[in-house]
Length: 183
Image (cartoon, rainbow, N blue to C red):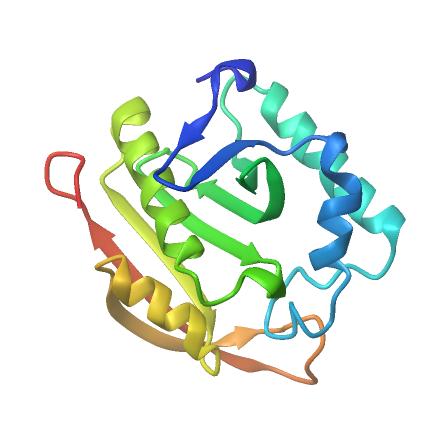
């Protein structure tokens, strides 16, 4: 696997680097926001300590030879504006994308640009060709991101429990298989 010190993913407007404790305050700015994360499973976090624990876990994953989860800080002009995640299946043949952008930066195409950058990086570095993403069935913004990535709707299923909503929710799954590592 790739060493975290070697990873700096650049896109036209953004930079992604491994999530570390230096991003604690800026992660709190979006991870503690109920408005920013209302349709998410693992967010919003309930306290600064919970955000700290999340980052400690991310740092531990980066130390593994083959992490199951790679958490990135998303930077715009060196300012931390969100987070990007790549989850791996047990056999590392499929990557699952996740993202959250601070509310102040919504509507600028940053999630699409960053997700494309992650897909390219992991296609080149690990040979991944299949990527998935999912969201609450009512999360129209995330569905648009997936469609702009060229992902195709696969299915809707139950079993989703968002952190802020009561009861079981529906979830939409999208996927893409890249040809020769390019979308």
